[in-house]
Amino acid sequence: MTGRTSLRVLTTPTSQDAMAQAVESFFARCAGAGLAEGTVQFYRGRLDNFRRYLEQHAPGTRPAEVTSALVRDFLGAERERTSTAGAHHARATLSVFFAHLEREGMVSENPMSKVERVKASQKLVHPVSEEEIERLLSVCGRGFLGARLRALLLLMVDTGLRASEVCGLDLTDVDLTAGLLRVRHAKGGKEREVPFGQATRASLLRYLARRGELAERAFFVTHFGDRLDRGDLFRICQQAGEKAGVPGLHPHRLRHTAATLFLRGGGNLFSLQRMLGHSSLTMVRRYAEVTQSDLVEQHRQASPGDRFLSAVQKAGGRKRLR
Image (cartoon, rainbow, N blue to C red):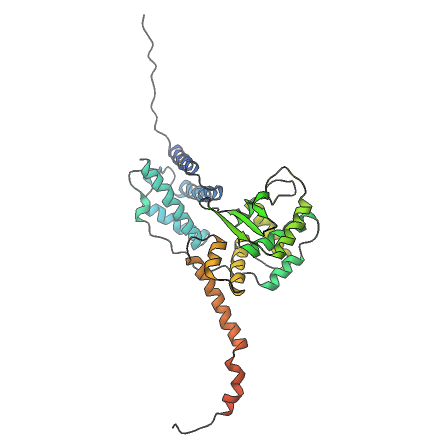
């Protein structure tokens, strides 16, 4: 009796298959590491941009064939298409991606080892003025959407939470009696307690009265009763800004505003660091630079020495030195 031998045809995966496998392997690693959903989406968007660039400018390129020169060309295109910060974020994503591929033996040489860092701009986002905040609050309107908008605006200006942290709040995270939030850090899963004031408390209570009883555990919900996500929050801020005449309003700008107002009100850098959830003082020192420029302007308007300007002017004239 003769057995049949099945022949196995070995095929080399196409460049698209090879890149898809590499990306799938990378995101499996991200899931295993327990990275926050926001971080995963950050990586996914930039890797999608890189793959589109390869399809247009270097079709057929496999991960192992990506060179440092090709990456530099891509980063240059990203700088022109978006900004210096966009190119900086793209490089950071590719560094993590190719480091993973190198560890897994999917590339023999990491092309990022010879790609220079992109110097991102260190300028702070321009904070919203107090007058603009009052305009924003005045356009909130009534009903559920108005109560939610007022609660969101005051909470972000009062606490400086990140967009993902606002959307991640559950009902059990908000202690209205103590005036405290339990915030899960978007990066690394760490928790911290963040206080909020009386105005914010009042706006949260009004919002909860409109929210009513829902099975959804999220604190902030859509008008369909689902958890608010970052995209929803960005659109809400943008629409409120357009209505109030505050262009370019987004959650991160409100975070900068909260930090600036906190320091202007007499808060110290160490407390601000804890409130914002920064691991070091590097970032909060930049907020201090903004308030320092405020001090210069305020001193010009209220200089103690200028109270005696008339006495100095009277002492003018040509006199001999003694």
